[in-house]
Image (cartoon, rainbow, N blue to C red; front, side):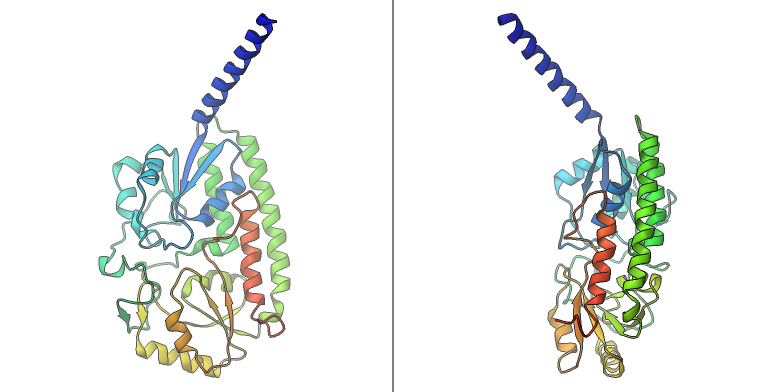
Length: 318
């Protein structure tokens, strides 16, 4: 009996050591934003552990990392971010030698250009106060170039997933066959979701959509909707009087105007802009705050965006 108990305890001890070894061997991935985490989860195998830096309710433009997150970066096998136009708080750190071989910009591949950032445009937790913007000829102040909200367009998200697959396949001990299977599954599920969302959004084609800032442009353009106006040209700054007047005129002339707001930003000033106007409101979340981070998380994210737009229909308005 004693011998059997000893054998059982020894087996449990070996199992514990094996479990600890497997935990140490797990591929450690850091993502900057939750939508990127969703794409990693769609492709990755079960032995990949993901840490996401920007928590719900925070902005990727001016976030301050915790010491534990800095340690996660140091221990990461790979770091995925959009690039310096989006996660400005990471630009200096990830451009250093420490992370040069592990950092992957999903907007630029591994060749990440330097982007000058104006410190005066960042560091405001209250996204409705501090500075005003008067210009109307520029967009989101991430530097010159392309709109960095690439994860909102499912076609670009698929490209991101393929890039993630490629990086994960190069990690030590990667199960390439399983990664291939996961990517193929994601492609199929995403294609099915795109077709269904396109059909569901057809009744919205004649509605004039307005958004808090230009992040929604990628989604709108992909599904052929009409984005008639943007309330703020830069979410870090309050809009100037001239731009407010222009937006109010567009809202007054619009056909069934619907304003899509975001939970991350201050709502007080846009309520005053729209006071007295016949407008439908809906809320969408570009950072996928309430989406479960699992293998189908990105698909659920796309459906969630579509549901937010569908609330603009008169019969669905709250």
